[in-house]
Image (cartoon, rainbow, N blue to C red; front, side, top):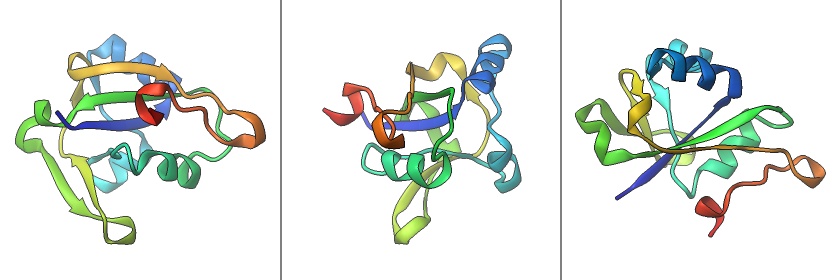
Length: 115
């Protein structure tokens, strides 16, 4: 199983839970797909795109469960990133964790990511 991660504001995830699907954040809508990161990419993604942002959640998803709507495409630094062309059904998530800011403004990732 390949686990991929989505970082988003807590309020957007609460809305997704009410609707049963996550439609993405503003950048996702602009780009036409939902951005995800691998375990190796997620900390850099957090620091580049969410630096200092409070009230975030980290959503874990089994990549294979998303089927052909998930595409691995070249992005930052020539690396393959997972992009979901469609909505994310909330029932496809493995877990959702708060992503708090730690000492010095870096994020405190849960042990499932750092371990």
